[in-house]
Image (cartoon, rainbow, N blue to C red; front, side, top):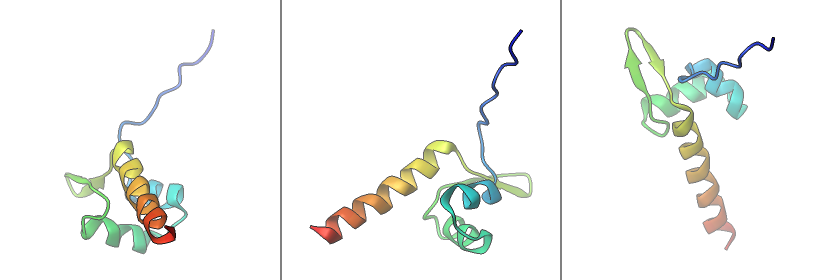
Length: 68
């Protein structure tokens, strides 16, 4: 019997920092300024995987414009 893989629905700020290769303080600043969307759940911030992708795509698009 195989164990089902559970895909997280939310990421913590620390998880997003690790995924992006950023420090925690930089990631928290991106969240606080709205660069990366998030919601507050209790006392914690949570970030949808799609919002991380959205941030990466926006930054990549800006790099492509700069290079053109």
